[in-house]
Amino acid sequence: MFRRSPRYRPWKRKTQSRPWWLYVLLILSLPIGLEFLMRAIVGTTGGATRWFGDESAWAKQVQAYQLGFADPRGQAYEDLPYQGNLRALRNPLMSYQLQPNQKTSFWTINAQGFRDPDPVPLQKPEGEMRIFVLGGGMAFGQLSSNDQATFTHRLETLLNDRVKAQRGKPNQFQPTVLPYRADQVEQVLTRPPRIQERQYRVINAAVPGYASGNDLSMLMQQVANYNPDWIIILNSYEDLLLPSAQAGVDIPGLDALLKGDRDPVGAKAKETVQGWLNQLYLVQGTQRFVLRSPSESTTPTAPLNLLSATGTIDASLPTDTTELDQRISRYRNHLLQMVRWTTASKKRLLIGLQPEISTRQQSVLTPEEKAILTELGDSYAKRVQTAYPKLVAAAQQVTKGTANSTVLDLHQL
Image (cartoon, rainbow, N blue to C red; front, top):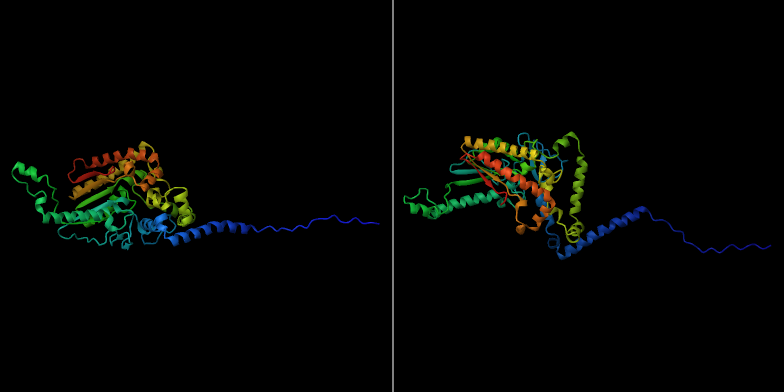
């Protein structure tokens, strides 16, 4: 009997499936390797500033000017988003105020909570002309390189230099007493006007985020104690963004945080992860050279604008005429109270309506400004250009017939 030989079967190697985590590791290692490679190339060529700009320095500057809120005892609200280095304490009368005695390379907050390198004594020295500046981020000097670059410091220098020039070359300025003859009067009036020859002290009492209601509280509760001669209020923009139901700007997100209506841990984690990603050279390079988009840190609109911390600036502007008129009316009433106080106390008040970016000519816009306008959108420009003339009219209405108050419209500067 014969047996059938088994059929020939070729030898096959038994394959084993690789673990899933190995594939995940390979996927993660690719961007990490590219990041290390880019940093090595940039480090050896010294091209960080040339390729990406000084992003780290700009990020530090933005962080330095972001408000970090704390309770009246100084205990920080750690779970609020956008917590920066400029510490602000909760104040029931002014919503919040800058914490005294803090300093960075960009700004100095003195013992009174003003942006000034020196303390301000309650007793005004003899011969001193005190000018207090109130307002929000623009008056404060948001993102300025140092205290000397602010509007208030430059104004103080300009005034004191003018006094020195008048004393050194009095014939180059208008005399204190006009001559008798008409032809001589006409001649001397062509010279620059003479200002009072006193020692000028300009004090920056502005606080980032403040609207007119906050400015009014700051004037009544703190600034009035220092016997100012002049009050300059440089604001108006924040009043357009602030809902009419609110008298002033408050700490954003604080009420919801205290009620437990939001997930502060998740929001904080998202902010931390986003900040970490923006520091990667791989992300910066992709945005700059592939997507051709401006860096995240070059347009820090949301973190530095309290009224848009939970949304866009465009969404904060009123969409209907009734709401806009109510916001204008609130602005007018706050200014009216300031005008009445300065009149009664025989002070001088200058109401400045701050410049606004959408009115700038396209030919003079910087690339950063163009990027901001693109981010804001067309509807933003239309709403702002409709609202600003109403702000100007409100300011002119409250100063009409007063000798001590003046309006300076800078919104198209």
